[in-house]
Image 1 (cartoon, helix red, strand yellow):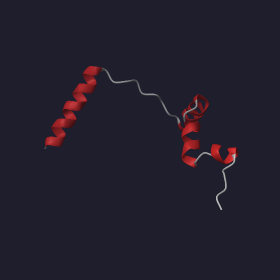
Image 2: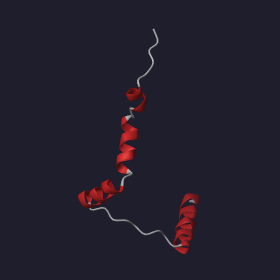
Image 3: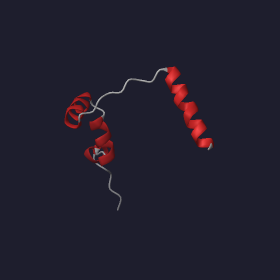
Image 4: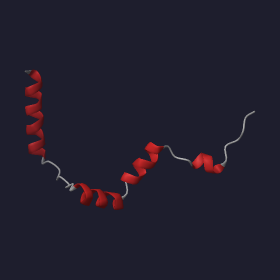
Amino acid sequence: MIRERTSAQRRDKTLAEAFRELIGTEDYRHHANKLFGLKVEPELTPTLASLLEAIGRRARRR
């Protein structure tokens, strides 16, 4: 016997989906920053990024 899923069942999220949604909210980010003492790191300048990439390439060649 095949039963049709109810609309509530179709809206159920997996735990992973629910967690991704939670951590994607601005309120959670503020809470996590305070709770864990997290800090936002600024983006690297293009010069510094290319320097780090060159260092990484050199280290991989060794």
